Image 1 (cartoon, rainbow over the protein chains, first blue to last red):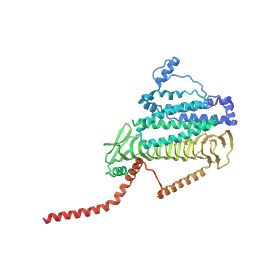
Image 2 (tube, rainbow over the protein chains, first blue to last red):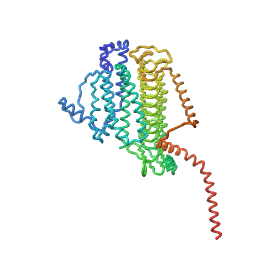
Image 3 (cartoon, one colour):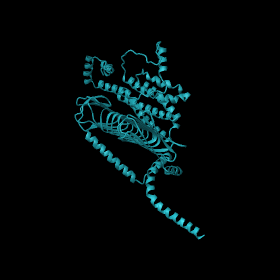
Image 4 (cartoon, rainbow over the protein chains, first blue to last red):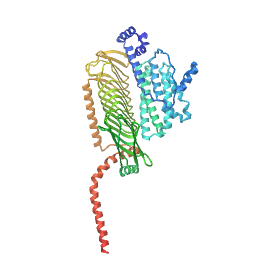
Amino acid sequence: MNDIWKNRLSEYIDGELDSSERAALEAHLATCGQCYAALGELRQVIARAQALQDTPPGKDLWPAIRAGITEERGVRLTPGRRPAVPARRFSFSVPQLLAASIALVLLSGGGAWMALQSRQTNLATSAPSSASTARPRITEAATWTGRTDAAIADLQTALAQNESRLDTATVRIVRQNLAIIDRAIADARVALQKDPGNAYLNLHLADTMRRKVELLRRVNDMAAARS
Amino acid sequence: MLATLAAAMLAVMAPQRQSDTTIAVPAGASLSVNNFGGGITVHGWAENRVKVHGETGRRGRVEVSLVGNTVVVKTGSREGAPSVIDLDITVPRSMDLTLSGTYADITVDGVQGGISAETVNGEVNVHGGKGNITLHSIQGGVTLADASGRIEVNSVNEDVDLTNVSGEIKVETTNGEVTLAGIKSNNVDAGTINGDVIYEGTVTDGGSYSFGSHNGDISVSIPEGANVTVTTATANGDINACFTLPLTESPGKHRKTFKIGSGSARMELESFQGDIRMCRPQEIRDRLERKKNKHGENDKEKDNDTSFTFHVDVNDAATYAARYARAYAPTYAKAYAPLYARNYARAYSRAYRSAHADTTSH
């Protein structure tokens, strides 16, 4: 793959290339299947990230984030307002975008999950671990899947402690479906061990893990609603 | 178990009570319904009124109120556990609906507003709808027909079926098939883990289409004259087509890219274990027809099969008994009432005559 163009695919998607660069990249895409496939994957991840439901969290995350930024950078922020961030150009690798996509799922479901956590002091300290995945600085599949695994484990712990609020038949069905997803995740992991750089397998694993997160989040939402 | 079944039968055989409320609604009003168990059925009509009919049973109650611009329908129980209540609601056709239940089947017909329907243990069947349409069930199948707008449909443990639907479409299930037929869209995203995905619909220039499964086959229609770049990926399946495909690239071990026409639209077809097949629309329609007929035959075979074995879950059996007793009780009551009425009339008549004879003889 031509690295010059590969690194500029996200700018192309964002419409940030000038007309001559855009024409040159499009000419390259017409002849390079790998870049074309990578472009498709980037678009898919972005589309999936955009399609995520923006569920308002039960607890406003902004004060903690603001405190963190203030502490790190010594920035003064007006209460209740997001800081004006200067326009900045980002380029992400495919694994980074995958991680970001899953992190968005985790954050969008954070409200109900935190609501459950707030009733269980023993689990309260694990909340930041899922939120921290919102800042992906990871490029290796093993790293981002490890963090997602940890977040999934937290959600499963929460479910185990709250599933008594749900009907036994529902719990049985949910467990069956989680097992189906787990088998799919295991299949994808085995395939990835043989072919770690395979973009399709990485995307498939990420998408399957996202499904697990979403199912756990949904069931935890249901349990929270019945408390 | 018999005691549970008997209790369930007795509960539903108890005298049914009904609740009827009709209220006038302003233009642009919406409907919000929450029913723990039973059915929620909504029909559209041309009047600016909402009519709520509830089969409440002995303990159930239905509350209807107008809160702001929203008609709110809530069900509850006068005492004890939540009651099973069937709601039949008629609304202005353009009304937006928000329907939720736990052990509730949700049915909507003839409504042309936005629809949000969510249940845990029950089916969601919607015919019509326009705008934002969001349908969810955990344990039941979901069907949507003749609707348009921004569509999001998902189940967990059953099939999802969309027919004659247009707009932006996102469909997902975990343990079930996804069938999309007669679709008009430039943006479709459909996936399952354990089941096939079938798509028969438009492929519009500049559109985006994504279909995925882990354990199932993917079958899609590519109309003649379509301009689409198809990227396929499978780890253990085959890729084939009913027509000649121009292979553009084979960028990876598991990936193939085909550029059809100008390649303007993008289509992603991915199945980890299953096959990927591209055909012309008529071939997919024929396949859907065969599948439909096969399901019909299977249903008949199941009905005629008397040698099957099964495992009984007490809760499921009680739910089943309650549902069918509710359906059949009125029919049997109608059939047997005249017979028993005559028998009781004769018996009471004899008893009356006998008592009267005793009185007069003294």
